[in-house]
Image 1 (cartoon, rainbow, N blue to C red):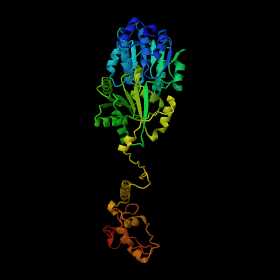
Image 2 (spheres, rainbow, N blue to C red; image 1 turned 180 degrees about the vertical axis):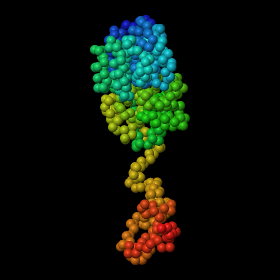
Image 3 (cartoon, helix red, strand yellow; image 1 turned 180 degrees about the horizontal axis):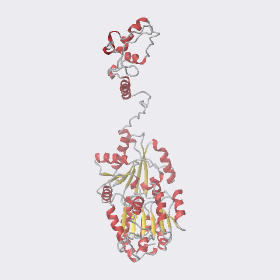
Image 4 (tube, rainbow, N blue to C red; image 1 turned 135 degrees about the vertical axis):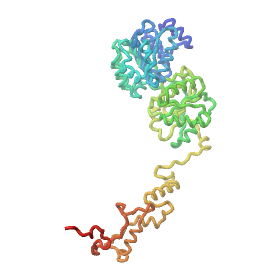
Amino acid sequence: MSFADLGLSPKLLEAIAAAGYENPTPIQKEAIPPALKGSDVLGIAQTGTGKTASFTLPMIERLSKGRAKARMPRSLVLAPTRELAAQVAENFEKYGVNHKLSMALLIGGVSFGDQDAKLMRGVDVLIATPGRFIDQFERGKLLLNGIEVMVVDEADRMLDMGFIPDIEKIFKMTPITRQTLFFSATMPPEIQRITDQFLHNPIRVEVSRPATAATTITQNIVRVPGKDDKLKRAILRELLRQDDVKNGIIFCNRKSTVDVVAKSLQKHGFNARPIHGDLAQAFRTETLEKFRTDEVQFLVASDVAARGLDIPAVSHVFNYDVPIHADDYVHRIGRTGRAGRKGAAMMLVTPADGKHYDAILKTIGAEEIEALDFSKFFDENPVQESRSRGGRDAKGGKNAKDERGGSRRSSRRSGRKPEQSGDASETEVSQPEKSLETAAPEEVENAPQKSANRRDSHGSSRRRGGGDSRPSRRRDEAVVGLGDHVPAFLTREVAR
């Protein structure tokens, strides 16, 4: 079957041919015909199968007739990340080259001014992330009663990022007569509830089992003994040096880890750059463009880049961290092996990752992922014995470092310098003071002197309350008045 058999216009067929595509993918074969007829479509397919063209092509066909009005977009595409939204915009520009359709991209990190100007002129296609879309609506820059087609892309990612309340709110803003195209790689119960509520008799298109990896991807793992970040980075560098690695995306679970790994790779001479949600949008856009044009060889990314990066020639994906959510593994490795190409995915697995690794195996329906033999590497780079927080090594004995650290801490608490921490001084501090009532007479006589001399290294008293060390008085001694120390004002005669 060719694209001409799907019912697309000659102008669209010409744009598709210019983009280098000849035959539609399975999801495109099943989704485009009902979308052209105006039906709601619920598309479920693994990442990298051409879902974006499944809704952009019928939208361009429908919007080719008509004209947009100021602040009243004719269609709306919601995407979870800025990168995915920008990619959808690129698809509209590529396939709509022969149509005079206006488009606006509403994403964060960009000034409102340019976006406001486009909205005031009127746009046929509005592509947005949920947060920025709601911001513009609440500022009074949008009127939604002209929406003819609404698309939700990567709906399961919307769920992961907490956008579901926003999606529900936006659905209620749009006309009930709209056509809805809903695409997702997986279909959790929360997503199913939304489709049941807001889609009208949708045509369900499911071309593969949810959360499965493409058969063109070779998957391997590396067993990492212990949780040593330096060792993990060394293993990663060894993987990147393999002969068949042309380029790759390295995924980490945390933004801070992304920065550390990228900096480490740069230090060791690799052409790598980080990308995550805390970086400026201009830097992220520049990084992606350089990666597409091979100016950057390795992209160190958080899951913000796991969805929607349509870069066909990614040879490898490296999971530096095992993803916490099993579905994210499918989306990560889906960045390689796209459009029928062969790809490779490798993952570093530590003993602490057992729970998440088992969940991934269950999700992809595999008993095990083949482990690469790194025994020679570990022989050349012996693993350091891990030490517990209690300061004991693998054999159960205290290590010297923790012993020294413990001495410093105890000396600080007792007010002594480290070199004064001998047995005698420890005995003096630890033994309780004898009561003067039960002490021998010679001890009572010496008690004032001991009390006066019992000071710490800072010169302050050890007695509770921090007072000075005045001589103690025996309980059977008579109380004597002020004696020679009577203040002068008490000896003055009082006038009568």
